[in-house]
Image (cartoon, rainbow over all chains, first blue to last red; front, side):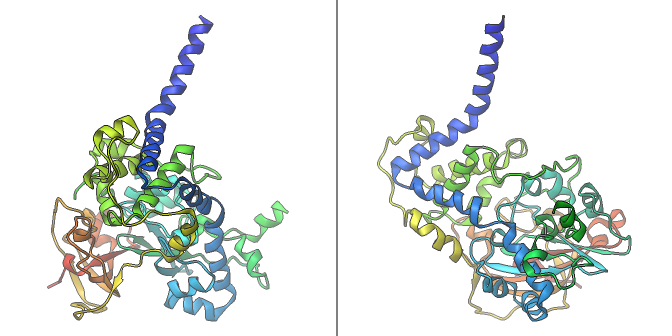
Length: 213
Length: 220
């Protein structure tokens, strides 16, 4: 009986892995044998998005915009160039636009048709951003979506939803939290979450960092 | 195409599933599927628009019941087959049975950083003046093409206002199907929520959608 249970769970685990995992393994073997892909290049691609390109990039952009009025102006005028000043350029960030949250306006970004996302500043998108619940509802019921992220905005706040249908990629500049006067860019960047730059979150309050410290 | 990918405004998908400290990848195979898709894209055998079409033209049941990187894997397999880079039998066997086709380039590890940081800009030279200017009221066309398009269903036959003239960009509707880039003016168009969803809209909702000139007419 216990042996049967063991076999069963083993088979189950195996088949869960196998369907798609074996398919992907077979594909890599085939493409490598054909000479179309170079496995070390695959490792390097993965490594890049695991270690080098992520939401810290965007947080540095936002923190600079918060502290440097000239930079903020350049960012709002030509985000691609302003973001390139910090060294963040390239794939899925070729044509950037920065949009700023204010007391009256809240911006939120979605791609209803696929998963367009500003990789250069935020890295790869989280699963929820690519999922049907978010993509279907963000454009129709943004307040309902925000509630699931525990964000509540005043009724008279305009909610601007940006549907990334072209190759323009949007970065939200969240509002700078009060009580952060005189903070360094590096410390401010710790308040800038990924979700705050998609528009499904707000920048962290300074007290959250103090709690952590 | 009116495929399962065109999700804006659909209902019934339930709550958004959030994961604390979510990793980029949830399994090794996701990493490999991701990297293979990028590396094959770098061979120049097809366009980014073609790869989007390969994914969205999966049967709706498959699209909606597959995880994201499964969709990418299936899309990649379709592109490899339709471009004659692999055969059905090779996919099934997971090994080379026929000599490879030549590709424009193979991405090597040393070139990854340079290739990514260069990206693939899609803005092109201007050859004719823009038909619309900021402030113009435009009417999105009522179209239902079976080919790739980036005019979402929820924004068809709707009136909006040109807010930004982005420039001339590669036109996905043709570029996805080997019919060339046919660059066209791209506009940022502002819609009131109520003009899209009617009385069911949040009164303070506005939408911005990037739309190419061939999707638009002057509103009367």
